[in-house]
Length: 138
Image 1 (cartoon, rainbow, N blue to C red):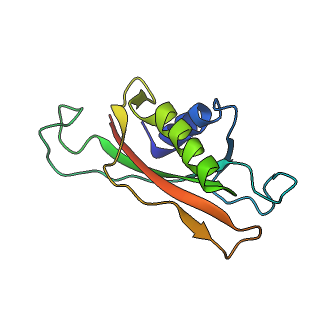
Image 2 (image 1 turned 180 degrees about the vertical axis):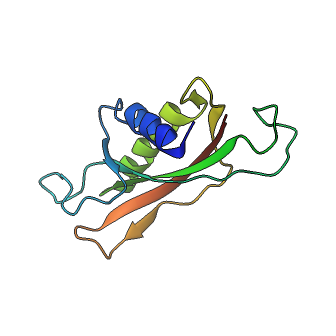
């Protein structure tokens, strides 16, 4: 299984969330918003090449080093902090413990909590939260 396969499977899964627009690898220059100028929720899936770990007792393969560890980041953003938190919850529920392919382990969220942050450098300003996940694939 390749990183590209895992990326495509994650993108397809994210796109089943009906209320969050999903982008692949780049922040939209002019995201949709409401009449007050607040950006509607969206998420960006960032490409990851992953890595081949050393010997580990929890590997999926019989031969150590044959499995790909694939960390991935999904950044959720919105023009309102509550919308951003709600969208992050939808993304987390969709991805955490998902099996992306028959030959991959469960996708699990890393135990890192990064607070919502306002990005004033974009117009209109929006809140964002990076969510980190990882899996192993044979």
